[in-house]
Image 1 (spheres, helix red, strand yellow):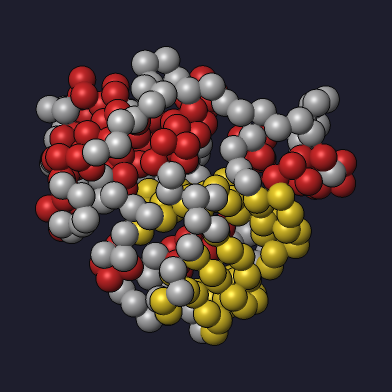
Image 2: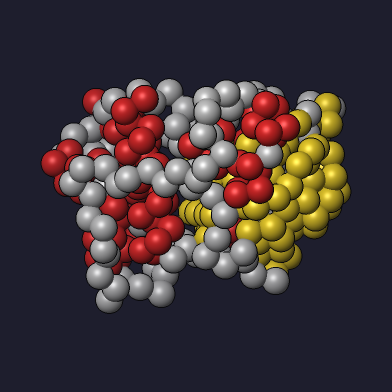
Length: 258
């Protein structure tokens, strides 16, 4: 679905990414993990066209996307939920989520796409008329991801989905992402600092350090490596076992297809 090869990016004259390469297969969940400043957010923003690389190649389903603008990449059915969970403060929750259906017709009806977004986050049905400025951090995260889902994406980019969330909500977020992957059958590229959260969800992982890929392996292999666990700061016993988060209470576990 997505192939990135030897990607280098500069910001204000400083090299932030250096020859970064990774792939996201069809229907796979791949994560980029690393400490603050490692280059995770820059990688996702570059894929989305918000940063222009100085060198390297990026292909989406075999098509070159280097140099395309964000709206052009979105029209290739790429959804993006940024780290900041930005929502339109003056719009309601329902209007925020519906924005992609106004901007992109897609292969499926707007009603179908909105229905699936709400089935992943049913709690948002209760907040449909609430304004964006009245939402909590966790609610903004839900709206941001639901809005990306309303595009009907083939590839979903999630930047730091657990950032700023309470511990109890982090577990729910894992359940929601697991549900999206399983029921929507889409490819997901996830950037995350929380190593236990990411290792429990992903099929494959890439560890970024100072703008370079330092380690690459299946999530199982990364989980079972004592060296990698120490590097990521995973200290608790049993962290090597894959742990799938349970869906949050009230989340539908089967989404009917049209």
